[in-house]
Each structure stands twice: as C-alpha cells, then as structure tokens.
Image (cartoon, rainbow, N blue to C red; front, side, top):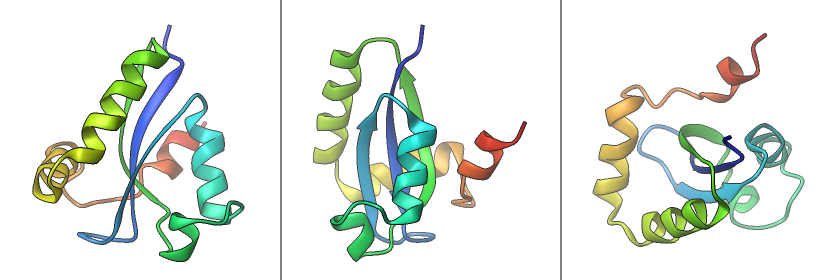
Length: 97
C-alpha cells in the first residue's frame, strides 16, 4: 500500500527546485499551486510538479527526502530529466479521470 510521496517542484525548466514529502500528493500540490502556505514555494513561485516517487512506509519517504535535499543540483536535474525530460507539470495528468 502506497501512502507517502517524495516530490520535486520547480518554478520552470531548470528553475528553482523544492523537495517535499507528504501523505497526500494531490492535496499538497494543490496547496502549493494555490499558494495557501506562506514560505519558500510561495515566495519563489515554485508550483510545477516535475518528479515524484511513492513509498509504503513514512520512514522510507522521509529518509529519501532528507537524502534528496542534500543532493547536488545536477543530480536532481538528472533525476527529473530521466523521467520528465521536458520538465512538464505532472499534476494535470495525475488529476485527470
């Protein structure tokens, strides 16, 4: 059973990156897009979901999020481009019926 997600948001192709973890990817990305929470993503207009991975255990998700936050930027770019070479927003497809 998948119930936790690590995700990367971007302000645009090769733009500012944000790494997060959540138990509801749909809700959390909607919050970022609506700029409901003051902070980094609101300040830097970071709202494009460019990468995500699902986990069954919260401890696994948090451990990977902490590791990913320490990665060099080019490693994060390679991770994103390995699955999403055009840096498209993955959120609309996720929300499609």
